[in-house]
Image (cartoon, rainbow, N blue to C red; front, side, top):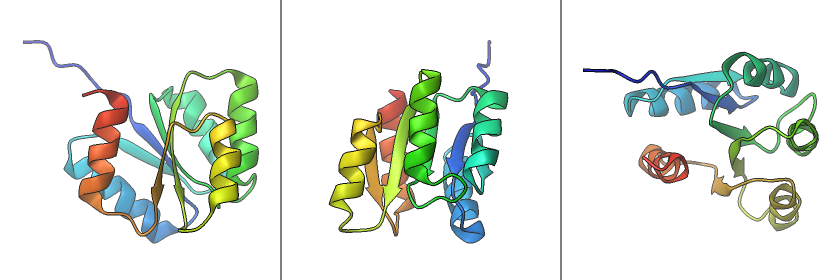
Length: 124
């Protein structure tokens, strides 16, 4: 029997607690995940792990989420992106959508809904 090793999902979250909750929720569903707390560390994780999915808090710091999306788009990385926003951020969602975000979720998140979205985005 061959076991396929999954590439970790990269989580971009500046809040330590929220980042840990996201990673724990993904790991509980059998998905490896790593977290970067700012845009610079997230770019390093993207280079190191070549993930299929990035979960991005749009309100990230250094660079912010929109700037990070611009950098990813310039790199032409083939990456599925699930962006987390606060309720009522329609303008931010529009800007992020234009920069390649595949889907959105709102904070606070439900672990079950998060894992349903991830399964749908990764088609598994």
